[in-house]
Image (cartoon, rainbow, N blue to C red; front, side, top):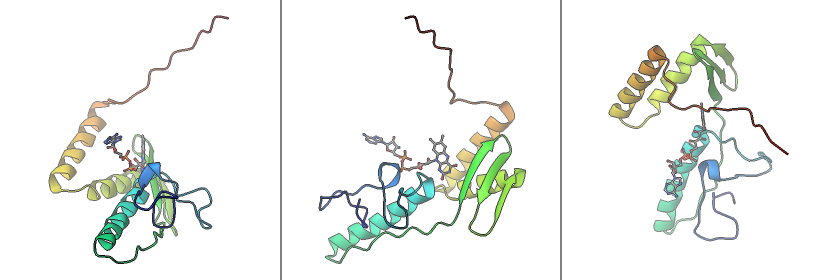
Length: 138
Ligand SMILES: Cc1cc2nc3c(=O)[nH]c(=O)nc-3n(C[C@H](O)[C@H](O)[C@H](O)COP(=O)(O)OP(=O)(O)OC[C@H]3O[C@@H](n4cnc5c(N)ncnc54)[C@H](O)[C@@H]3O)c2cc1C
């Protein structure tokens, strides 16, 4: 990927989000595979596509890390902001509110919130892995 999120050695193929490795001197291992990276790359690419359409030069993508959040269990999360790090139930509430706010559309926000509340009270885990011991016979 070059600085415009364009696949190397191509002129009009772009890749963003988890499938893209945006490697530069500041990020030698690429950017983290996280939603904020994908969202900002998407907004930036949309502006660059408009630039192509309007015969304007492409603008390089620069990622400003505003922080990282992750849930690590029921009522538990970690929030790692540039100047503030915290964890626990408060972090989980912050994680939930920010994720709900970043969903597009009022309907999606309400549906996601109700779905999460339902899962919380019913202990419903629709996604799970069943791992059994592997008995290899040689
Ligand atoms: C379990 C889990 C928990 C996570 N938790 C967090 C978190 O707490 N915070 C955070 O910031 N990030 C989290 N992430 C990472 C985050 O989900 C990804 O970084 C983000 O979704 C990447 O966005 P994307 O648009 O690149 O890819 P995706 O969101 O994966 O979107 C790709 C889309 O392309 C579709 N697609 C795939 N192949 C085709 C095809 N051939 N044709 C048409 N469509 C296709 C897929 O169905 C999908 O909808 C988590 C990821 C996982 C797996």
